[in-house]
Image 1 (cartoon, rainbow, N blue to C red):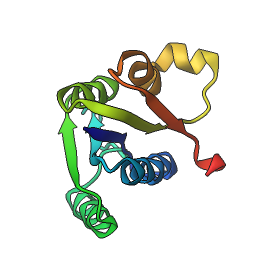
Image 2: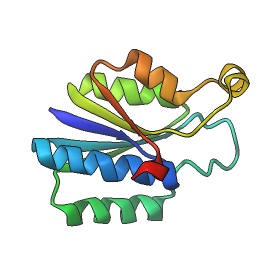
Image 3: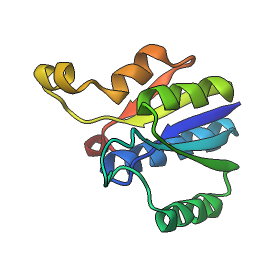
Length: 131
């Protein structure tokens, strides 16, 4: 069993990583950190660079939690998190969330909404301002 963590290199991803690692350690579960991008922009600040990916792997190794980092491009981010959770029989998915207006949700869609509605297991959401 695993804890799947949706990760982006910002305060929301860091909050999800922090809480996801705590949950994994307390449950003695493996962690899979998912970083994905639709790939529809030349530069996606949410897609981790190779060096940042190595740094993230080193940070995870230092925690002592069994882990794997999964990165993919050209996918719907919410669908990819759900797919990884399904394939790995996740016990929990952890994602960071940010406030959005109702209009913003309708116009842009929501990774969080997709994960919450479609994940095969409980989803734990976290806001950085409450940690």
